[in-house]
Image (cartoon, rainbow, N blue to C red):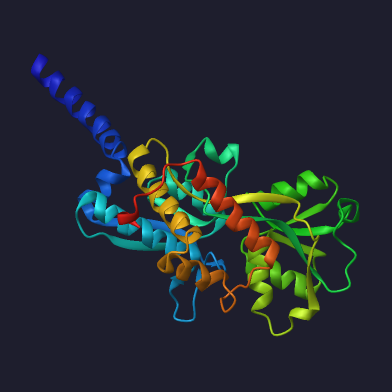
Length: 301
């Protein structure tokens, strides 16, 4: 009789433990086992991450993911496949928490709320929150936003920045940046808020860029761009950070390989040409970050 009772109890115990054992697998162990790094990124965050004319995910952040993949191959001693998954901003955190992606690199910024669910890498870029408006608009100052309809993506730092700078602005929510840009063009909102570099990227791709403006001159906020990884994955985060610091150190020191990567997206002939102030800010941020860390050995650059 005791054996008959014990068997179902043991079965229930194993059924409970097995999912927990699977969920406890670290990213490093998972990648070592499968040979695949599953990475989330944006479909519409040019130049960080976007779908290009060939239908492939491409961009500055995708290049960072490629560097991380190569470092993983060194650390694990085996070839790794980088599997990219296009995500909307609202999907990013849940996909990481539910182990559907191992990492997200796009145009993500640190917040304490997000940090409770995921861990952040070092910042490898800098941006801020600004508004895209039609030319001739008088929007820009916090006071000018009172009662105005400002398009935002839910759950983004842009939403937080606008709500902070002017609580009396009327936030209008969109699922994608494309919807927000269209709404502005059609005149159903007064402005669309996003990251400075993303707005520059959109504007520089338009046939009629002079019909729009990015305001104010000084962004409402300054934010670092970082990758997000699942919590409790310190070894994987070490690899991610090492890859990003190695890139930044190489770029600041003029290593042609890394300068080429940066200039592909932000150089004079690139997809998005950064204005001098923003480019200087990016470089200064990189310099500060690498100064507080031990140099990556030259033979590993």
